[in-house]
Image (cartoon, rainbow, N blue to C red; front, top):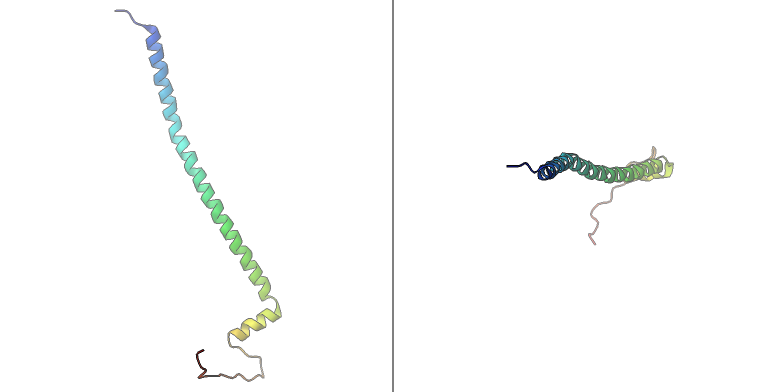
Amino acid sequence: MRVRWDRVGRTALLVLLLLVALAYVGPARSLLSTWHESNAKQAQLRQLQQEHDALQRRASALRDPRTLQSEARRLGMVKPGERSYVVGDLPND
């Protein structure tokens, strides 16, 4: 029986091609997973940046004496020397 080197070569080349393809599967999956994770982190970063900006605006507003006074009044505080009144038994309209 004679060895057909052309078939052996094609078979070896096919096996080698399959091994190379299998070698790329793991890194490709890792790359895809990292890409998805990166997108999720970017979305989280945008959300946290918006929250940070809102808190910065709130902190800036609270430095204004008028805002500070209105917040204190909302909490029921009064200035020294002022009288506080509590009105009760109001109708529930």
